[in-house]
Amino acid sequence: MTGFFTLALIAFLTSPESAHRHATELLSQGQFHRAAQLARAAVQQYELRFGKSSLETALLLRDLAKAYRGERALMKAESVERREIEILRTRLGEDDANMALAQDVLAEILIDQGRFTEAARLLRLAESKLDPQNPHLAAILNDLGVICYHDRQFKEAALLFHRALEIHETSVTRSNLATIEQSITLRHGSPAH
Figure 1: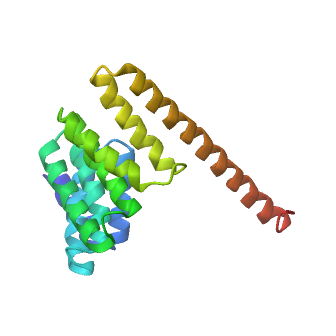
Figure 2: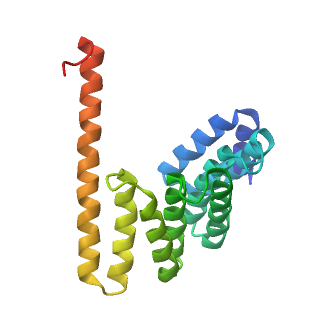
């Protein structure tokens, strides 16, 4: 219990942005229980500062849902992620790319619950919102492949995994090129074109 009060105090005394960064760090370290505690406290701060239906609150709700998923509190994770989706739908519209990312998070939660049909429907919606070379599309296609594999649709799963890998490899290459170009620019000025 002392740990919760320490994390809640950190969230209260620091800026919402700092609490959000700390919760994200805990998530990346697999410390889901502590991340959930901090994210819950930070959500309250975000709601007070930005409003219950702000995009800032929605972003933190995604991290809270991921923390709950990591704790295997799947019903809580689903509820929180559905709240994020409603905020995004209201604020950005159904076709926004951010909706696709949130739908992918919800689909992963549904997969964990064994609700493959509903997850596949969400993933197909998410897939339609992203550019064919968007790096996030690779994760969505991979998740669809997992569902197809589960449903013993092995050829379809293999095709989806292959497409996901191609997108991932292409986006890594583009990212590496951008980093190299940025490094050259910092060292020598603008690169010659």
